[in-house]
Length: 67
Image (cartoon, rainbow, N blue to C red; front, side, top):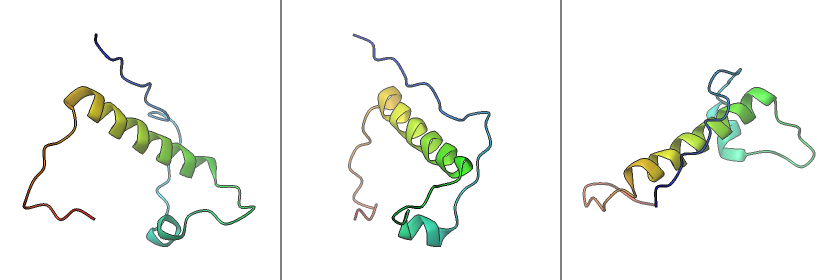
């Protein structure tokens, strides 16, 4: 059974990558994230999920440092 890829969210929309501090801290209580940040986040997630659906889970690599 073939698995369909997810629609790619925000592929042609306004996208802004948050700075590393915002990425590290995340959203604070009551904060409403800009739509450009959410488009970036959803694009990142849909791209990575589609990569797994298309190529499968990557094999273990002893040279890669995993958290």
